[in-house]
Image (cartoon, rainbow, N blue to C red):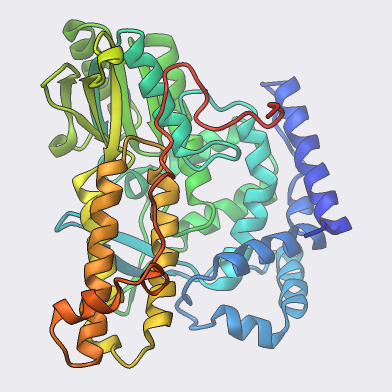
Length: 443
């Protein structure tokens, strides 16, 4: 789809801010609020929010309601409120979602749609400024970076001999970041008092839970459009401290961390340094997920970004002299896939057509496989496809009040009711090779 002039103007604004921040790492930007309220920036913010859909906040206004009300009309009102200083964000709606493969529940805060638009506009302006100075150890929620970029670092460093691994994540990271220290980190690059006031208002808006609004002096609640950027701004302090005092190679994806080390002693020192640096930030590692693992043949592995990682030796005779790091979907990821397939084929959906349910299964499988195909996942893909086939067969049998074996027989045709096949989609990682083709690479 062709870009509009407004989109080009926003891109040029971001490029200009990025270049200015990159050219002068000590520069503090003082004229940004007027850019947040620009009509093209707000329009881009609305498009991002609309594309992501999402639920309503405490005001119960949905994306569909905004479309009926008139996006242009709402954006004009938001711009006027922001310029006049009368804008006040509503408290976010607090919900809890289950963590896959765990009994824990993750708190999620859902701002109102209008507040998500304002947060998106602020992120559009702020992101290029901070992105210009972020450390290379950070991969989560950053433009032109993906989880597989972080995963490739593990493959490369293990190949170089760093196979003692510190594995951890930050306990309640998004909920624990102190507001005062976060604002200090933001103020190292931003001195626009109107924008700083807006960010403080966003942080202090609080959440509504059980009919009461709760406000805290800490946290960038998960679910806020700008929260991932603010978390990265704060955790960049960890990245910089690691560059100055750490040992081993740090890989951070948001609040998930691994450190690749050459020796057990180095790994123990790295874990101690990590605890100390996090304590300086008012944070701490989650003890249940903190450990040191030696990647070796026949030994244990680590779970990172949905994959299980293990050190193995090549099976084929021509590869027996090689040992390398491999990865496949973790047990939690496999269980999540099975749970989702069960949901799509549950009994209360029997009134839906088989073709409709098959399309939903395929949509899920394409997304799931699109992530996990960059790994050594052939066996796990076969398991999930067989499970999907069995679940669909049981669904067909129930619709016709037959035995499950009858449903499997009905799906034995070459088309298998349109269920996709994942065979041949795997792309195994290789050391010191990009996990995806370079943009300018020739075919």
